[in-house]
Length: 201
Image 1: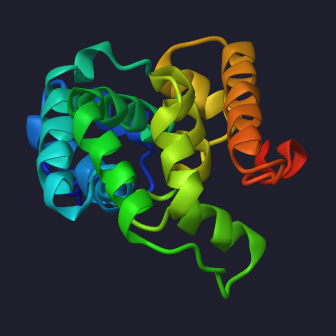
Image 2: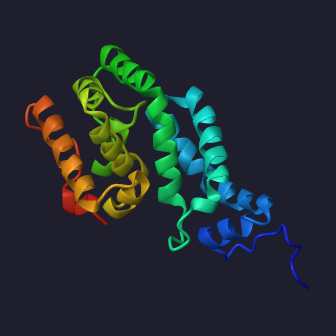
């Protein structure tokens, strides 16, 4: 028996679902279901949990309205959604910087009990970043901070970050390198990030 038109088979990729949603808008719910938790976690780490609900709601509303402009050659909508979320977050720059500076003032520097990757993610997360690093992340130029946090918080590859921000691959690499140098200088020579070989997938 054929599935009803509104039911999306689990094996269909995002591009197929999005194209189908052009004529069957309810199908877009499958994209929401697949990616909401991850996008919400990213927004929460950058702006705090209270703002994350609004950021996510706006992100998926914009994605739905822009779905006919989606590049169907890309099977996963993940980078696209991160790009939209980052643009929405850009309207909250002051809130993000305020949160990072508040963390810098209020939280003592402590060592993470987890592994190096867990420590990096915890440190750069808006709710886990501590001390001098919080101040350094807040002071980064917006374009560098976006690249840094997309790589560290979302685990996107450089190519996916380039897709998300609609910039060349080389721009992602250069922005991340500049961010790394600024943070290393602010931390007195300590490298707060994973080595590029480990981060680049």
